[in-house]
Image 1 (cartoon, rainbow, N blue to C red):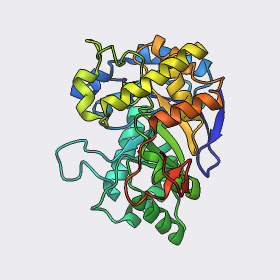
Image 2 (image 1 turned 90 degrees about the vertical axis):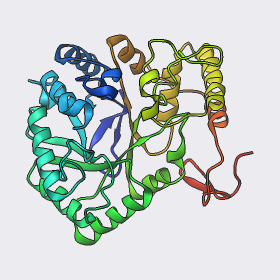
Image 3 (image 1 turned 135 degrees about the horizontal axis):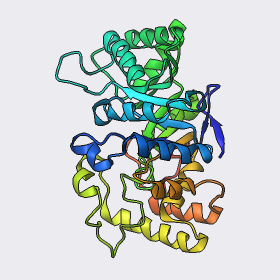
Image 4 (image 1 turned 120 degrees about the vertical axis):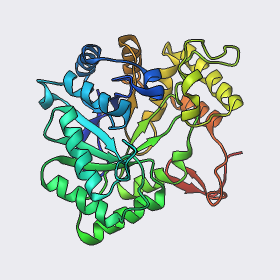
Length: 343
């Protein structure tokens, strides 16, 4: 397993990490993702550790806390061998203080996550969304206090706009507070919007990308193609409305190229899609998901080899889209502004 620095920090993370959205299986969305219990989760973590994957990502909102509980049970007795990343900020109830990242919510949410996980510290805590109602300085001061108290070690964000990140980093620098080192983002061959604003920001400010949904919300599994409809058992029938939309024509064009490269390399479509991401600037870790051991082992096969320059170029070309204003005509490619947009 290859390890990379998480942004401009001293934390080294594996290029693949395991997402635990399938753990717990409660609610209309997460029950369709998976219903992994503690025994099954323990087996998945065993396999991960055998392959050098020691970072596990969760969130309080995953199955209303059950994901963190199952993860905590599965790592019991080996906390020193694993790193935990979790998130908070999305609604966890109907009360006026059950969402957001105000001081009380951050402190209470962190304590509750620690209890569910069965640990006394979190390696990486990420804010799951920007809270426009809470002053940024209040958020950062509280996070800094939690770090000084030893409850969390590093902080990051997820689903923030570029200006929200930059304003936060500026305030942290001005007041000598802990700064964000990670940005958990949606990024895939069928969703490259990350490259327009957030990738250049990450390169400039030292934020490591932790990529969620690298298979485009389950569309780049190899089970969907131009001539193959969504399988009857696919979770997309129940969950597609919750994820990023994808234009069918674009999806089929990309899958065609992925299938060609799969034939050339002997690798699977998911392995190729993940390997492409690992070649992209700012990516520190790609979060893979697995409903069972077979899926996990297949995804772990995305490392230890590299696509050729020609194969990368073909994937780049088929998945490129014209960026929106104001990026055009200064087309962003690999985190840098280019004068000429793609043909």
